[in-house]
Amino acid sequence: MSIGALSVSKHRDSARTGGCSPCRASAAGGIAVPAQLPFSQRPRRPVKAALRSLATIVLLALGANSALAGEMDATSHSHATLSVDETLTLAGTVEQALANYPDFVELEARSTEARAWEERGRDWFPERPSLSLRYQTDRWGDNDRLDEYEAGVSLPLWSWNGRRATQSFAQAMQLESDAASQRLRWEVAGLLRNMLWNIALAEHDVEQAQTEREMAQKLAASVERRHELGDVALGDVLLAQSAALEAQTSLVDAQARLVDAERDYSIFTGLDRRPPHRSETLSPHDRLPDDHPALAFAAAEIRRAESAHELAAKVSTTAPSLLIGPRRERAANAEQYDDSIGMTLTIPFGHSSQKQIDMATARRALAAARAAHNREIRVQTLRRHEAQHTLDTVHHNIDAAAARAELATRHRKMGVLAYQKGELELIDLLRLQRNANAAERQLARLQIEQNRQIAFYNQAVGVLP
Image (cartoon, rainbow, N blue to C red):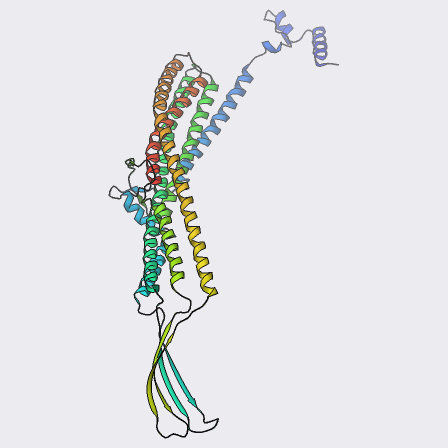
Protein backbone atom coordinates (compact mmCIF):
# COMPACT_ATOMS: atom_id res chain seq x y z
CA MET A 1 0.00 0.00 0.00
CA SER A 2 1.38 3.43 -0.87
CA ILE A 3 1.98 6.19 1.64
CA GLY A 4 -0.78 8.34 0.07
CA ALA A 5 -3.35 5.53 0.25
CA LEU A 6 -2.37 4.79 3.85
CA SER A 7 -2.89 8.44 4.78
CA VAL A 8 -6.34 8.55 3.11
CA SER A 9 -7.35 5.30 4.86
CA LYS A 10 -6.29 6.69 8.23
CA HIS A 11 -8.28 9.85 7.54
CA ARG A 12 -11.41 7.85 6.73
CA ASP A 13 -11.06 5.73 9.87
CA SER A 14 -10.77 8.84 11.94
CA ALA A 15 -13.88 10.28 10.32
CA ARG A 16 -15.89 7.17 11.33
CA THR A 17 -14.76 7.54 14.94
CA GLY A 18 -15.67 11.14 15.23
CA GLY A 19 -13.27 12.67 12.77
CA CYS A 20 -9.68 13.60 12.84
CA SER A 21 -8.42 16.62 14.69
CA PRO A 22 -8.81 19.03 11.76
CA CYS A 23 -12.33 17.78 11.06
CA ARG A 24 -13.27 18.12 14.74
CA ALA A 25 -11.89 21.63 14.72
CA SER A 26 -14.08 22.40 11.70
CA ALA A 27 -17.14 21.01 13.41
CA ALA A 28 -16.38 23.17 16.43
CA GLY A 29 -16.37 26.24 14.22
CA GLY A 30 -12.56 26.42 13.59
CA ILE A 31 -10.76 26.42 10.30
CA ALA A 32 -10.27 23.06 8.68
CA VAL A 33 -6.70 22.19 7.55
CA PRO A 34 -6.06 19.26 5.21
CA ALA A 35 -4.03 16.43 6.65
CA GLN A 36 -1.56 16.36 3.72
CA LEU A 37 -0.64 19.70 2.13
CA PRO A 38 0.98 19.96 -1.32
CA PHE A 39 4.77 20.54 -1.29
CA SER A 40 4.41 24.05 -2.67
CA GLN A 41 2.08 24.97 0.20
CA ARG A 42 4.08 23.43 3.03
CA PRO A 43 5.72 25.77 5.59
CA ARG A 44 9.22 26.92 4.60
CA ARG A 45 10.59 27.63 8.06
CA PRO A 46 12.73 24.48 8.30
CA VAL A 47 14.32 25.27 4.90
CA LYS A 48 15.17 28.82 5.93
CA ALA A 49 16.62 27.57 9.18
CA ALA A 50 18.78 25.11 7.26
CA LEU A 51 19.97 27.87 4.96
CA ARG A 52 20.83 30.05 7.92
CA SER A 53 22.77 27.20 9.51
CA LEU A 54 24.61 26.54 6.26
CA ALA A 55 25.44 30.20 5.86
CA THR A 56 26.71 30.36 9.43
CA ILE A 57 28.98 27.36 8.83
CA VAL A 58 30.33 28.84 5.59
CA LEU A 59 30.97 32.23 7.16
CA LEU A 60 32.74 30.62 10.12
CA ALA A 61 34.88 28.61 7.71
CA LEU A 62 35.69 31.73 5.71
CA GLY A 63 36.57 33.57 8.89
CA ALA A 64 38.85 30.73 9.97
CA ASN A 65 40.53 30.70 6.57
CA SER A 66 40.92 34.47 6.71
CA ALA A 67 42.50 34.24 10.16
CA LEU A 68 44.80 31.47 8.95
CA ALA A 69 45.77 33.52 5.94
CA GLY A 70 46.46 36.50 8.16
CA GLU A 71 48.61 34.33 10.37
CA MET A 72 50.52 33.09 7.33
CA ASP A 73 50.92 36.69 6.24
CA ALA A 74 52.47 37.58 9.57
CA THR A 75 54.64 34.52 10.18
CA SER A 76 55.34 32.72 6.91
CA HIS A 77 58.40 33.66 4.85
CA SER A 78 59.68 35.67 7.82
CA HIS A 79 63.09 37.20 7.17
CA ALA A 80 65.08 40.33 7.84
CA THR A 81 63.94 42.83 5.25
CA LEU A 82 66.76 44.45 3.34
CA SER A 83 67.38 48.01 4.38
CA VAL A 84 67.91 50.66 1.73
CA ASP A 85 71.30 52.39 2.00
CA GLU A 86 71.18 55.72 0.19
CA THR A 87 74.98 55.97 0.22
CA LEU A 88 75.44 52.59 -1.46
CA THR A 89 75.87 52.75 -5.23
CA LEU A 90 75.53 50.09 -7.85
CA ALA A 91 79.27 50.19 -8.50
CA GLY A 92 80.03 49.72 -4.81
CA THR A 93 77.60 46.82 -4.62
CA VAL A 94 79.31 45.23 -7.62
CA GLU A 95 82.66 45.36 -5.83
CA GLN A 96 81.14 43.77 -2.73
CA ALA A 97 79.48 41.04 -4.80
CA LEU A 98 82.67 40.47 -6.79
CA ALA A 99 84.62 39.66 -3.63
CA ASN A 100 81.86 37.21 -2.69
CA TYR A 101 81.72 35.59 -6.15
CA PRO A 102 83.13 32.03 -6.40
CA ASP A 103 85.24 32.77 -9.49
CA PHE A 104 86.98 35.69 -7.79
CA VAL A 105 89.77 33.44 -6.49
CA GLU A 106 90.74 32.64 -10.08
CA LEU A 107 91.71 36.27 -10.69
CA GLU A 108 94.52 36.13 -8.14
CA ALA A 109 95.77 32.87 -9.68
CA ARG A 110 95.83 34.49 -13.14
CA SER A 111 97.74 37.48 -11.81
CA THR A 112 100.25 35.25 -10.04
CA GLU A 113 100.85 33.26 -13.22
CA ALA A 114 101.43 36.45 -15.22
CA ARG A 115 103.95 37.73 -12.66
CA ALA A 116 105.79 34.40 -12.74
CA TRP A 117 106.22 34.61 -16.52
CA GLU A 118 107.31 38.24 -16.20
CA GLU A 119 110.02 37.26 -13.72
CA ARG A 120 111.19 34.48 -16.01
CA GLY A 121 111.49 36.93 -18.89
CA ARG A 122 113.79 39.12 -16.76
CA ASP A 123 116.10 36.22 -15.82
CA TRP A 124 119.50 35.93 -17.45
CA PHE A 125 119.13 32.20 -17.88
CA PRO A 126 116.06 30.24 -18.99
CA GLU A 127 116.78 27.49 -16.41
CA ARG A 128 118.81 27.08 -13.24
CA PRO A 129 122.62 26.73 -13.57
CA SER A 130 124.15 23.45 -12.50
CA LEU A 131 127.44 22.34 -10.99
CA SER A 132 129.35 19.32 -12.32
CA LEU A 133 132.29 17.42 -10.78
CA ARG A 134 134.47 14.82 -12.51
CA TYR A 135 137.33 12.55 -11.29
CA GLN A 136 139.26 10.01 -13.34
CA THR A 137 142.05 7.62 -12.34
CA ASP A 138 143.77 4.40 -13.53
CA ARG A 139 144.25 3.08 -10.01
CA TRP A 140 142.07 0.06 -10.75
CA GLY A 141 143.49 -0.32 -14.23
CA ASP A 142 147.13 0.05 -15.33
CA ASN A 143 147.93 1.93 -12.12
CA ASP A 144 150.30 4.36 -13.86
CA ARG A 145 149.33 7.12 -11.41
CA LEU A 146 146.97 8.85 -13.86
CA ASP A 147 144.71 11.34 -12.06
CA GLU A 148 142.27 13.92 -13.40
CA TYR A 149 140.10 16.38 -11.39
CA GLU A 150 137.52 18.54 -13.16
CA ALA A 151 134.77 20.90 -11.96
CA GLY A 152 132.47 23.13 -13.90
CA VAL A 153 129.36 25.33 -13.88
CA SER A 154 126.84 24.68 -16.63
CA LEU A 155 124.91 27.79 -17.70
CA PRO A 156 121.77 27.28 -19.81
CA LEU A 157 121.48 29.89 -22.54
CA TRP A 158 118.49 31.53 -24.17
CA SER A 159 117.79 30.44 -27.70
CA TRP A 160 117.72 33.01 -30.45
CA ASN A 161 114.87 35.51 -29.59
CA GLY A 162 113.74 33.09 -26.91
CA ARG A 163 113.91 35.67 -24.14
CA ARG A 164 111.98 38.20 -26.20
CA ALA A 165 109.29 35.60 -26.93
CA THR A 166 109.04 34.82 -23.20
CA GLN A 167 108.65 38.51 -22.36
CA SER A 168 105.97 38.86 -25.03
CA PHE A 169 104.10 35.88 -23.59
CA ALA A 170 104.33 37.41 -20.10
CA GLN A 171 102.76 40.64 -21.40
CA ALA A 172 99.99 38.64 -23.06
CA MET A 173 99.33 36.79 -19.80
CA GLN A 174 99.09 40.08 -17.90
CA LEU A 175 96.73 41.48 -20.54
CA GLU A 176 94.55 38.38 -20.28
CA SER A 177 94.53 38.65 -16.47
CA ASP A 178 93.32 42.26 -16.62
CA ALA A 179 90.70 41.38 -19.23
CA ALA A 180 89.49 38.46 -17.13
CA SER A 181 89.05 40.80 -14.17
CA GLN A 182 86.95 43.21 -16.24
CA ARG A 183 84.91 40.40 -17.75
CA LEU A 184 84.14 38.92 -14.33
CA ARG A 185 83.17 42.35 -13.01
CA TRP A 186 80.86 42.78 -16.02
CA GLU A 187 79.34 39.34 -15.42
CA VAL A 188 78.69 40.11 -11.75
CA ALA A 189 77.17 43.47 -12.70
CA GLY A 190 74.70 41.73 -15.02
CA LEU A 191 73.60 39.28 -12.34
CA LEU A 192 73.30 42.08 -9.78
CA ARG A 193 71.26 44.28 -12.12
CA ASN A 194 68.83 41.43 -12.67
CA MET A 195 68.49 40.75 -8.93
CA LEU A 196 67.90 44.37 -8.00
CA TRP A 197 65.17 44.83 -10.58
CA ASN A 198 63.63 41.51 -9.53
CA ILE A 199 63.36 43.02 -6.05
CA ALA A 200 61.77 46.15 -7.50
CA LEU A 201 59.15 44.10 -9.35
CA ALA A 202 58.48 41.96 -6.27
CA GLU A 203 58.07 45.05 -4.07
CA HIS A 204 55.57 46.48 -6.54
CA ASP A 205 53.65 43.20 -6.58
CA VAL A 206 53.41 43.28 -2.78
CA GLU A 207 52.17 46.87 -2.75
CA GLN A 208 49.63 46.13 -5.48
CA ALA A 209 48.46 42.99 -3.68
CA GLN A 210 48.02 44.95 -0.43
CA THR A 211 45.93 47.56 -2.23
CA GLU A 212 43.78 44.90 -3.85
CA ARG A 213 43.29 43.13 -0.52
CA GLU A 214 42.17 46.35 1.15
CA MET A 215 39.69 47.01 -1.66
CA ALA A 216 38.34 43.47 -1.44
CA GLN A 217 37.99 43.67 2.35
CA LYS A 218 36.16 47.01 2.14
CA LEU A 219 33.81 45.59 -0.47
CA ALA A 220 33.15 42.49 1.66
CA ALA A 221 32.38 44.64 4.71
CA SER A 222 30.03 46.82 2.66
CA VAL A 223 28.22 43.78 1.27
CA GLU A 224 27.83 42.31 4.76
CA ARG A 225 26.26 45.54 6.04
CA ARG A 226 23.86 45.63 3.14
CA HIS A 227 22.97 42.01 3.77
CA GLU A 228 22.17 42.80 7.38
CA LEU A 229 19.82 45.53 6.12
CA GLY A 230 18.21 43.08 3.72
CA ASP A 231 19.40 44.81 0.53
CA VAL A 232 21.45 41.93 -0.92
CA ALA A 233 21.27 38.18 -0.82
CA LEU A 234 23.49 35.89 1.20
CA GLY A 235 25.14 34.69 -2.00
CA ASP A 236 26.67 38.15 -2.49
CA VAL A 237 28.20 37.98 1.01
CA LEU A 238 29.78 34.62 0.24
CA LEU A 239 31.06 35.86 -3.11
CA ALA A 240 32.58 39.01 -1.58
CA GLN A 241 34.21 36.95 1.18
CA SER A 242 35.66 34.59 -1.40
CA ALA A 243 37.12 37.53 -3.37
CA ALA A 244 38.70 38.91 -0.17
CA LEU A 245 40.33 35.55 0.58
CA GLU A 246 41.58 35.32 -2.99
CA ALA A 247 43.20 38.74 -2.59
CA GLN A 248 44.76 37.58 0.67
CA THR A 249 46.24 34.53 -1.07
CA SER A 250 47.68 36.73 -3.82
CA LEU A 251 49.32 38.92 -1.18
CA VAL A 252 50.96 35.92 0.51
CA ASP A 253 52.28 34.72 -2.86
CA ALA A 254 53.68 38.17 -3.65
CA GLN A 255 55.40 38.35 -0.26
CA ALA A 256 56.93 34.94 -0.86
CA ARG A 257 58.37 36.13 -4.19
CA LEU A 258 59.82 39.20 -2.48
CA VAL A 259 61.44 36.99 0.17
CA ASP A 260 63.02 34.84 -2.54
CA ALA A 261 64.30 37.87 -4.46
CA GLU A 262 65.84 39.47 -1.36
CA ARG A 263 67.37 36.18 -0.22
CA ASP A 264 69.00 35.70 -3.64
CA TYR A 265 70.51 39.18 -3.36
CA SER A 266 71.77 38.61 0.19
CA ILE A 267 73.40 35.29 -0.69
CA PHE A 268 74.94 36.73 -3.85
CA THR A 269 76.38 39.89 -2.30
CA GLY A 270 76.77 38.92 1.36
CA LEU A 271 75.07 42.21 2.30
CA ASP A 272 72.01 42.94 4.41
CA ARG A 273 71.30 46.23 2.66
CA ARG A 274 70.79 47.28 -0.92
CA PRO A 275 71.17 50.45 -2.96
CA PRO A 276 68.03 52.40 -3.87
CA HIS A 277 66.39 51.70 -7.20
CA ARG A 278 67.87 54.20 -9.62
CA SER A 279 67.19 54.25 -13.34
CA GLU A 280 70.29 54.13 -15.55
CA THR A 281 71.03 56.36 -18.51
CA LEU A 282 70.59 54.54 -21.79
CA SER A 283 73.90 53.94 -23.55
CA PRO A 284 74.26 55.70 -26.93
CA HIS A 285 76.03 52.68 -28.46
CA ASP A 286 74.00 51.12 -31.26
CA ARG A 287 76.56 48.33 -31.79
CA LEU A 288 79.07 46.38 -29.77
CA PRO A 289 82.06 48.56 -28.79
CA ASP A 290 85.60 47.31 -29.18
CA ASP A 291 86.19 47.52 -25.42
CA HIS A 292 83.25 45.28 -24.58
CA PRO A 293 84.49 43.20 -21.59
CA ALA A 294 83.46 39.86 -23.09
CA LEU A 295 85.01 40.65 -26.48
CA ALA A 296 88.12 42.17 -24.91
CA PHE A 297 88.67 38.99 -22.90
CA ALA A 298 88.22 36.82 -26.01
CA ALA A 299 90.70 39.03 -27.90
CA ALA A 300 93.16 38.76 -25.00
CA GLU A 301 92.92 34.98 -25.18
CA ILE A 302 93.81 35.16 -28.89
CA ARG A 303 96.82 37.34 -28.03
CA ARG A 304 97.95 34.84 -25.39
CA ALA A 305 97.53 31.91 -27.80
CA GLU A 306 99.57 33.72 -30.48
CA SER A 307 102.34 34.45 -27.97
CA ALA A 308 102.28 30.82 -26.82
CA HIS A 309 102.71 29.68 -30.43
CA GLU A 310 105.64 32.06 -30.91
CA LEU A 311 107.15 30.86 -27.64
CA ALA A 312 106.94 27.24 -28.78
CA ALA A 313 108.64 28.15 -32.04
CA LYS A 314 111.48 30.22 -30.53
CA VAL A 315 112.25 28.30 -27.36
CA SER A 316 113.72 24.84 -27.87
CA THR A 317 112.95 21.94 -25.59
CA THR A 318 116.72 21.43 -25.17
CA ALA A 319 118.36 24.79 -24.58
CA PRO A 320 121.98 25.49 -25.51
CA SER A 321 124.36 25.55 -22.56
CA LEU A 322 127.87 26.78 -21.65
CA LEU A 323 130.12 24.79 -19.31
CA ILE A 324 133.03 26.63 -17.62
CA GLY A 325 135.39 25.13 -15.05
CA PRO A 326 138.97 24.29 -13.97
CA ARG A 327 140.81 21.07 -14.60
CA ARG A 328 143.72 19.50 -12.72
CA GLU A 329 145.45 16.44 -14.19
CA ARG A 330 148.55 14.34 -13.92
CA ALA A 331 149.69 12.23 -16.83
CA ALA A 332 150.66 8.59 -16.49
CA ASN A 333 154.06 8.01 -14.84
CA ALA A 334 154.38 11.76 -14.24
CA GLU A 335 155.13 13.57 -11.03
CA GLN A 336 153.68 17.05 -11.65
CA TYR A 337 150.03 18.16 -11.97
CA ASP A 338 148.89 20.43 -14.78
CA ASP A 339 146.13 23.03 -14.12
CA SER A 340 143.86 24.45 -16.83
CA ILE A 341 140.51 26.10 -17.40
CA GLY A 342 138.10 24.95 -20.12
CA MET A 343 134.79 25.94 -21.70
CA THR A 344 132.28 23.72 -23.43
CA LEU A 345 129.42 25.10 -25.58
CA THR A 346 126.54 22.71 -26.32
CA ILE A 347 124.17 23.61 -29.18
CA PRO A 348 121.30 21.23 -30.03
CA PHE A 349 120.51 20.76 -33.72
CA GLY A 350 118.49 18.58 -35.98
CA HIS A 351 114.79 17.69 -36.00
CA SER A 352 112.91 17.62 -32.67
CA SER A 353 109.61 15.74 -32.59
CA GLN A 354 108.78 17.19 -29.17
CA LYS A 355 109.08 20.73 -30.52
CA GLN A 356 106.77 19.87 -33.38
CA ILE A 357 104.24 18.50 -30.90
CA ASP A 358 104.47 21.68 -28.80
CA MET A 359 103.95 23.89 -31.86
CA ALA A 360 100.99 21.80 -33.05
CA THR A 361 99.39 22.04 -29.61
CA ALA A 362 99.92 25.81 -29.62
CA ARG A 363 98.36 26.12 -33.10
CA ARG A 364 95.34 24.15 -31.95
CA ALA A 365 94.93 26.41 -28.90
CA LEU A 366 95.18 29.47 -31.16
CA ALA A 367 92.48 28.12 -33.48
CA ALA A 368 90.22 27.41 -30.49
CA ALA A 369 90.75 30.96 -29.17
CA ARG A 370 89.82 32.48 -32.53
CA ALA A 371 86.72 30.29 -32.75
CA ALA A 372 85.70 31.31 -29.22
CA HIS A 373 86.13 34.97 -30.16
CA ASN A 374 83.85 34.55 -33.17
CA ARG A 375 81.23 32.77 -31.07
CA GLU A 376 81.39 35.50 -28.44
CA ILE A 377 80.77 38.15 -31.10
CA ARG A 378 77.68 36.28 -32.27
CA VAL A 379 76.34 35.76 -28.76
CA GLN A 380 76.82 39.36 -27.67
CA THR A 381 75.40 40.69 -30.94
CA LEU A 382 72.24 38.63 -30.45
CA ARG A 383 71.97 39.77 -26.83
CA ARG A 384 72.28 43.42 -27.83
CA HIS A 385 69.65 42.96 -30.53
CA GLU A 386 67.32 41.17 -28.12
CA ALA A 387 67.78 43.88 -25.49
CA GLN A 388 67.08 46.60 -28.06
CA HIS A 389 63.99 44.80 -29.35
CA THR A 390 62.61 44.21 -25.85
CA LEU A 391 63.21 47.84 -24.88
CA ASP A 392 61.41 49.09 -27.99
CA THR A 393 58.50 46.74 -27.26
CA VAL A 394 58.17 48.07 -23.72
CA HIS A 395 58.24 51.65 -25.00
CA HIS A 396 55.36 50.94 -27.38
CA ASN A 397 53.31 49.03 -24.79
CA ILE A 398 53.46 51.68 -22.07
CA ASP A 399 51.15 54.11 -23.92
CA ALA A 400 48.57 51.42 -24.61
CA ALA A 401 48.79 50.15 -21.03
CA ALA A 402 48.26 53.67 -19.66
CA ALA A 403 45.15 54.16 -21.81
CA ARG A 404 43.82 50.76 -20.81
CA ALA A 405 44.40 51.45 -17.09
CA GLU A 406 42.53 54.75 -17.34
CA LEU A 407 39.55 53.14 -19.06
CA ALA A 408 39.46 50.22 -16.65
CA THR A 409 39.62 52.52 -13.61
CA ARG A 410 36.72 54.63 -14.91
CA HIS A 411 34.74 51.49 -15.64
CA ARG A 412 35.37 50.22 -12.09
CA LYS A 413 34.13 53.48 -10.55
CA MET A 414 31.00 53.31 -12.69
CA GLY A 415 30.48 49.71 -11.61
CA VAL A 416 30.72 50.62 -7.92
CA LEU A 417 28.06 53.29 -8.30
CA ALA A 418 25.85 50.97 -10.32
CA TYR A 419 26.14 48.22 -7.70
CA GLN A 420 25.28 50.62 -4.90
CA LYS A 421 22.11 51.58 -6.80
CA GLY A 422 21.22 47.96 -7.42
CA GLU A 423 21.77 48.22 -11.18
CA LEU A 424 24.69 45.76 -11.33
CA GLU A 425 25.27 42.31 -9.92
CA LEU A 426 28.17 41.73 -7.55
CA ILE A 427 29.81 39.17 -9.82
CA ASP A 428 29.93 41.76 -12.61
CA LEU A 429 31.43 44.32 -10.22
CA LEU A 430 34.13 41.85 -9.20
CA ARG A 431 34.94 41.25 -12.86
CA LEU A 432 35.36 45.00 -13.39
CA GLN A 433 37.63 45.22 -10.36
CA ARG A 434 39.79 42.37 -11.59
CA ASN A 435 40.15 44.01 -15.00
CA ALA A 436 41.05 47.35 -13.42
CA ASN A 437 43.56 45.77 -11.04
CA ALA A 438 45.16 43.83 -13.88
CA ALA A 439 45.43 46.98 -16.00
CA GLU A 440 46.97 49.02 -13.19
CA ARG A 441 49.36 46.18 -12.37
CA GLN A 442 50.43 45.88 -16.00
CA LEU A 443 51.10 49.62 -16.30
CA ALA A 444 53.19 49.76 -13.14
CA ARG A 445 55.16 46.66 -14.11
CA LEU A 446 55.84 48.07 -17.57
CA GLN A 447 57.19 51.27 -16.04
CA ILE A 448 59.56 49.23 -13.89
CA GLU A 449 60.34 46.94 -16.82
CA GLN A 450 61.36 49.97 -18.87
CA ASN A 451 64.10 50.85 -16.38
CA ARG A 452 64.99 47.17 -16.14
CA GLN A 453 65.43 46.84 -19.90
CA ILE A 454 67.55 50.00 -20.02
CA ALA A 455 69.88 48.33 -17.51
CA PHE A 456 69.85 45.14 -19.59
CA TYR A 457 70.72 47.08 -22.75
CA ASN A 458 73.62 48.78 -21.00
CA GLN A 459 74.74 45.36 -19.85
CA ALA A 460 74.49 43.99 -23.39
CA VAL A 461 76.74 46.72 -24.84
CA GLY A 462 79.29 46.27 -22.04
CA VAL A 463 78.61 49.33 -19.87
CA LEU A 464 79.95 48.83 -16.33
CA PRO A 465 78.37 50.68 -13.38
